[in-house]
Image: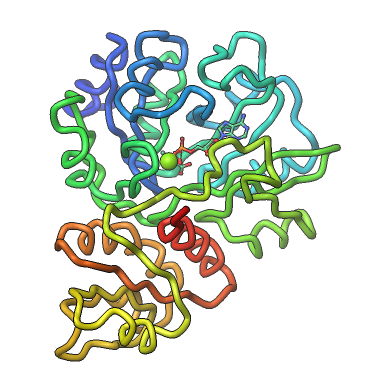
Length: 320
Ligand code: TXA
Ligand code: MG
């Protein structure tokens, strides 16, 4: 018999009792509850202050469970699941009848993934039900990539953060839906477009709110610090515009630090996009805690994960 850690035991007990537990994944921390418990699912929406039109992702422990959640799996979905699960890819497929409407916001599709974190995989294997888990942050704010981020948001609201360390990938999963059997990207994310296209060929992207009525969570403003944030390819000119205000710079690979700016975080001095993604939200949390007048963020190259990171920075900087 395998030994179950105290933490996993406690998480199992809480989840079985229809309570919520924050769980680690390789992308971001999730706020998890039993998909079949109306009480748990309601409390996910309440805790996050998330509108009910925004559906949740179902987390399962392996591809074998997929048929209990969805009713149809197109060939290309099978291929993607075989290639990338466990991993940072969510598939949107036709749902099984028993998946509650609150999970899917009344749609006939459901979003599902097998996350790639040893603690959460163990937890999912031991539970007799899948977990719904949106990112563990209040609606539209910065996603959490460390236990401390979740605690800052929800210390008084939830009983447990299952501590799995810092999230390796650091941005949310890539969401893929299907139209006539062909994959469509609804949300850019931690699995790059190039990696996906290497397996299934050219893939269309529909991740703008107006393009994609099917991905209701793709809001213009999202992943946002409370601090005013701007996104630019020309940090130096932007700094000039804001001086003498209190400025924080979020740079990609090189420093813009002069005595005139208050602080700076460089995401990857070696231009490593994976490293940049893993540090992105932690850097935004940090800058947001410093009472800055403005965060000036540098646009990354539009290749690989750079495209996904720019998507997040654009939404972080969106002002209506
Ligand atoms: O990496 C991740 O995906 C993390 C971790 C915890 O797994 N979860 C996450 O969940 O980012 P959340 O709820 O923050 O984002 C889920 C997105 C939402 O934008 C939602 O609109 C979309 O998935 N979604 C869920 N069900 C959908 C469906 N049936 N059709 C289209 N989009 C869906
Ligand atoms: Mg989220």
